View (cartoon, rainbow over the protein chains, first blue to last red):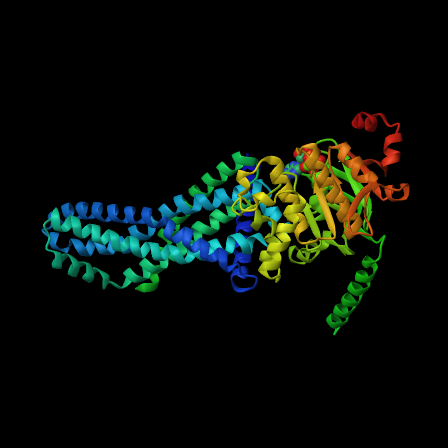
Length: 258
Length: 289
Ligand SMILES: Nc1ncnc2c1ncn2[C@@H]1O[C@H](COP(=O)(O)OP(=O)(O)OP(=O)(O)O)[C@@H](O)[C@H]1O
Ligand SMILES: [Mg+2]
């Protein structure tokens, strides 16, 4: 029994060590040559515009759902008019960043893990090395940069679409006046933690999603079955990490901002 | 101060090494008591051999005897547990991944499964190193890519994706990719396996031409004994009119191609084609028949 725990701890420590090593090497790859510009642009496109549809749909429906829910709750206090404030703040602080990150985990994280994983098991990563290319610079750095930059952009889009969805429900279902809704949203945005949380979180989440997926992908072994397993592991691990990071970021940012 | 002296000494020794390795018969590749195990499984126990410049080593052995593994150790894709490996006068077992890149510039490895980049076209695959890792002008790279694809008869497929090729076609593209940047050492892992006899012959002729006309040193891993003997017993000569002819090798030339047989992590045979044919070892005989 103790040896089982011991083994588990050992492999966990090794995993973390390898992850840190990859992240450090990738960071070094960001600031030193050679830099594969073409691949960075390609990944910005794949991760950015490729994820737009799914992010738009998630944002829209989330915004509409919480507006309908909040309307019911606020009615108990006769405060239906401030629904915009609630929707705006919760969309930007919590739901936008977290849900966008979870959607990207499914779409980007799994894709990266599967792609790098299959390159690993078919010796393509070794072929890159044999041809004089550092796979971290060629594959990991572009994905890391793209994930880090595009996740916040997609989150802001999702926030905006969600709040617009909220307006649709407010206007046509809750019968809240359009001007009232938007001014209430604007009031909500003056709270000082909104921007802090809304903008810091997606950078962190994007970083987590992409680095975890790259790490898992680059450690794939065991043929096509291994690729399937790597994909699952990448999605599960980064989803859990995103949600855990969300909790800790809330704690940290609340301490810092007040 | 001390650093400056070491750097100078390194520069001097690099220069001497460059001179030594420019001469014919230089030991371009040395395996000295190399051993490697994956966890419990010992793949290479104690393997030593030397490849001289312009010569050929043909590595034989049963499936799983560590042939592909040996080629990966040479390219630094795997690190040996024991022993010393020299490539072009550099101890690759001690180099970092970054330093290894310089050594790899002179090594062309044809992977057993091809390992073509499946997101790139045939052209981009073959020219990968020249497009991405060299300053060669694009037009020159294009010309070189077309030339090597011509060698392996794949020029018609230049704009296809690897997934649209047959197994043998993929293998030929892999050969072209390893040759494209003109490395002076080529490592062929089952280059002719799965090819029809006519294509296999053109690939063999190309291996012979690179060796005899360009001075390329080669390691050939194969189960196709027919191809192995063909490469060992033929040589290429350039006629006065510029045409290249493949002829039967002189017995002297034949001795430059050596067979090595791996079994249970050890070398159980080493010698030229003649010695291999005359061997009385029952295991090797059963391998040959
Ligand atoms: N990454 C790895 N992890 C664990 N074991 C490995 C790994 N790579 C190779 N092996 C083992 O090493 C041994 C030698 O493999 P290698 O690929 O060198 O064989 P080979 O001589 O090339 O065989 P074949 O003729 O079938 O290509 C095999 O038994 C294989 O199971
Ligand atoms: Mg093999």
